[in-house]
Image 1 (cartoon, rainbow, N blue to C red):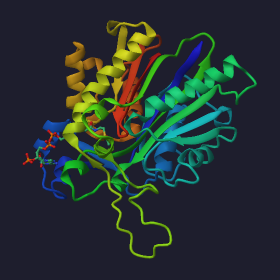
Image 2: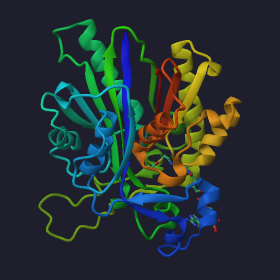
Image 3: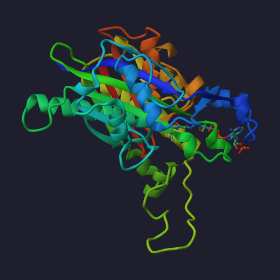
Length: 359
Ligand code: ACO
């Protein structure tokens, strides 16, 4: 028995912005961006909200053809079966760019989807979001099965990652604005008495960087300081706000962290599941940089095409990225029933994680 994937979907906004387009905005060019990252274009949400994108991806994962939402997004997906929204028990939405903080993005999506019986909440683990979201959903399913009556019964869970990073990118900073895009990905999960589904999980908030850098530096490697902390004006202050709400990243240091974190997380889920790498059919990583993925393939001594690489047309969509890539892998026919699949993420926090599941 286990928590199984029965549907996968993705959605992107209509506007495609190429590297050449970016060269009209900042001092950059297609060659630099392509060679350093593998990115060719990204989608940018002009009219689509996070709710529009999340809804479109979720409906695909639920087996519905097109979004009923207000956006003009392109969506696609794969499903084993159609899911009636009224049978969904749980919605977890991973995002750092919700339409609103209250109501949560998950609550907005619950309302839009008509998932009237679902409990819904947001989860922030930055770019590692999907591994955290799937692990939490699986754990809640497991808990309600092993000790029924002690918690909400969860048999169907919708795990959605959605980002509009274009809203928090500094469009004058060429070292970050070329890297990010907007989009949404979703998986429909169902408890199954016969199948194993998720077999292992590994989550981490790193302490490795602590050993070489102080704690403040660790957080400075990748930040979006838009909370109610010190960056925000104190209460009862009528002066103009000075805080900087843009995402920042120390690329090279994050690159170093990412290459170590991706290997560690993959090896951990393999060990926990008692599975060897040659039994794995597909690895679906967070899409931050094609060079990170190629490095991981070399280090693990496996062919690069074991990895799903979707970054060329999406750029880095943070919490949405691996879920979008999973939908690509299903759609491309790379994942079949019984296959062993690993999803792996790394990002701000600094967080990392992986889940290994039987399709
Ligand atoms: N176009 C042209 N030149 C540029 C651009 C650009 N868009 N951006 C930076 N440069 C220049 C820099 O100014 C620098 O010039 P200099 O040598 O004259 O000073 C030069 O290019 C090299 O810059 P680096 O930052 O050293 O380039 P690097 O090879 O490290 O690549 C990158 C940068 C792509 C960001 C890489 O470090 C990376 O991918 N890091 C990891 C990102 C990641 O994994 N993020 C995921 C987790 S966090 C999150 O997603 C929020």
